[in-house]
Length: 114
Image (cartoon, rainbow, N blue to C red):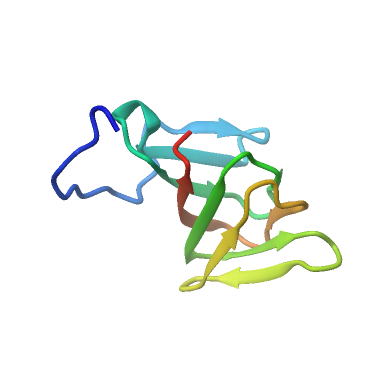
């Protein structure tokens, strides 16, 4: 784990100047805990504008904790809707999409780190 921290650290759910934007600027991701720090997981805050969509398949598992708003996650046949206070497990290589039903802010933890 190389440079992994051995003490508690606090992170903000704010989307700052270091955010990465994609989906025509409809999705913003602000890194918090990164692989470069030698951690076994990654963590970030994401902001999805209403109507934003992204493909799900990823080579890592994720837990998303919805802070505000609402998302539809999965395939057309088995999508789940998560709202503020809910969390969802997105397995590695999960099929489908994520769609913001309204402007949504979430915290994501990914394993392994990326």
